[in-house]
Image (cartoon, rainbow, N blue to C red; front, side):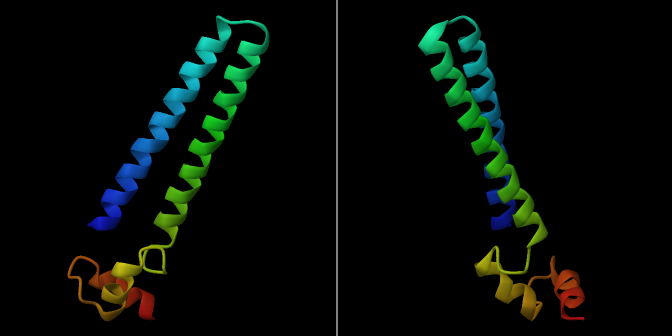
Length: 93
């Protein structure tokens, strides 16, 4: 359950970062000169951060039970979690 909450939180942060990048681009469209360049640069960095978060989310989904969530990996390997026991058994094959 902890990993689902973590993934949900990361997804929320990613969406907020994309939203913030969009607002910065909109603000930049109403400016000129150095202010416009600065806002666009910040928007670009914000968008790249959101992309990095998306990569982290994808890696977490791909690596479930393989070290990304260390607290749960031992449970998965032992088959202690009834919700995940099928996953742990498939992993042992």
